[in-house]
Image (cartoon, rainbow, N blue to C red):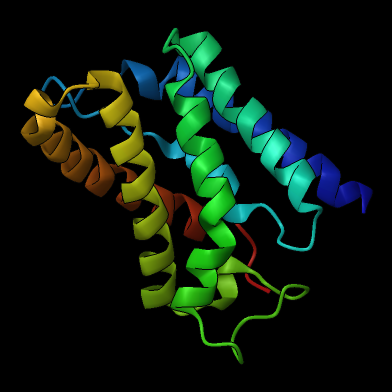
Length: 168
């Protein structure tokens, strides 16, 4: 139990620091900025208290906002994908595949991992860019940034999960 709390706490701190110190300073082609910090939400255990998870997700997004001076947009997007995470998993996985107590992202097939990560990443990025631009006139820009940044983030997220998590 303490090992799980320690690993999630270290992942929380490590991903926030990775995002604000390194990834926020990468602007590929002038606007592509990977948001890999959301991997924390993908990897958080399902068997934990949902209220605690939502509070931690909000604080996680807020900590990125504080360091990035982004006014709460990451907190809103992170809280939303944390809220819909179980619904997305139920949609992607069949009931026989889905067990709350034994869920491990590495135990899924690569196509289900991709679909899970891609769905939540695209939703997160769409919310972030919608709140950042906050204008219907910028809808094409919002979609363009969402698509291209999501592709970059999905690739880095899947590689990070495959390289840095244990397969059970």
